[in-house]
Amino acid sequence: MKLADPETYLESLRSMRRKVFALGERVENTVDHPLIRPSVNALAETFNLGEEPEAEELLFATSHITGKKISRFTHIHQSADDLVKKVLMQRMLGRRTSTCFQRCVGMDGLNALYSVTFECDQAHGTDYHRRLKEYIRYVQEENLVVDGAMTDVKGDRSLRPGEQSDPDMFVHVVERTGEGIVVRGAKAHQTGALNSHEILVMPTVGMREDERDFAVSFAIPCDTPGITFVLGRQPSDTRKLENSPLDVGNPTYGSQEALVIFEDILVPWERVFMCGEVDQSGKVVERFAAYHRQSYGGCKVGVGDVLVGAAVLAARYQGVDRASHVREKITEMVHLNETLFCCGIACSAQGYPMPAGNYMVDVLLANICKHNVTRFPFEISRLLQDIAGGLVVTMPSEKDLLNPELAPYLDKYLKGKEGIPTGDRLKIMKFIENMTMGCGAAAYLTESVHGAGSPQAQRIVIYRMAELEKKAELAKRLARIDEAPIDQ
Ligand code: SF4
Ligand code: FE
View (cartoon, rainbow, N blue to C red):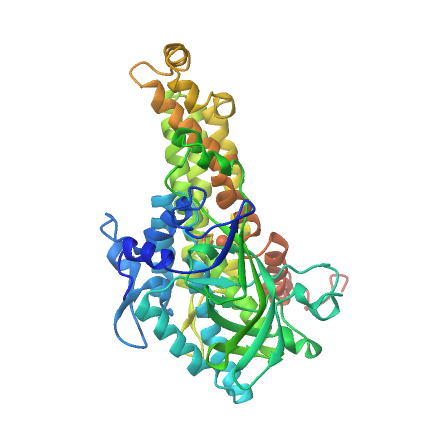
């Protein structure tokens, strides 16, 4: 693995020449930009062995291609145990950062494409699986960060990709040449796009026969000419520009989403993994979604652990930690969080091998997992705000606290329990603000609703996979419905 630690990872990003915009201005050095740096730090944790005794086992795996030690973020799962370890790794990193560490989407994309390219080659005589394996080998050896790019901008949602007045609403092939394909379009909400080396593009929906140009998957380096990145805003993000870490709440770590625009990019054939095989496109979407819905049963649980800890501290610092209703609320937070974990582990433990040899999660359980994630973090956040109290949104700024004229008053009047420094109480309040309505909420709440697919997408899969007729048969048999009618 060439990129072996956080520092070499940061250096590799600094050396990339990309077209990046933030707040309307070109940014040459994204790594050291104060708005972006916390998200870089969060991703860099995936390169950091850390202090947890289990970290080595979770962060690394053995490549089934080369037999070498690799980052689990570049691994193709070889067993149900691999799937479980993936969730445990995500919970560990969620605990470290209390945010989205951005590297799972590429991992989930590679795993989805691994089985689909194999099946596509069998159905169509294509050469995609070999190409993808070569690409995975390269990503593993270099230890690259891959942005998995699925979500198109979509335009008019009532229209299919092929029906849009502007075909660029979905990434599509505009030309096929001897060298490769030329593609155009944009991908929205791209997690960690500015912190990635590569972009792995996948179709966003299953395509129809007349939508062959939209059934496309490929990988390109992020510094390919013709790509433009526009950083997405987050609530209270400019507090990061104020040099007031207290007001940021979680000043070290953050998440990141960007709009990525492709303007007639030439992709060499060797990096094309689907081009026109419409019957394979829906499988990529469903498998990627299932892997990423599994992921949320790890990462969001790790963040939930931190929030439970924040509730404990807020209660203690304000002298209410022994109140029975506070204990009840903390118990409820733990119950909700561990339920999400149960779902993440269950869909992994029930994983099964695909024809390509890699392991797939239980799709129904992965969707149940993510569907719970669309709800429980909101209830966990509500309980946390309930315990913390109104100071979360009414406390003065760090600059007030540093003002010599104000400082003695604020220290005196914002104090909680005797023996607890006022500053400690205020730090946890600002952290709670960040996590439940500031930048942190972008990753913990909004991403929990829409990341890996909005709630309705899971409900469609749940209904389809529920085997309702089989269940009806169970009830029929026990109620003796097929036996003699009751009036005879
Ligand atoms: Fe990973 Fe979670 Fe972020 Fe997705 S939301 S990239 S699973 S940390
Ligand atoms: Fe996500």
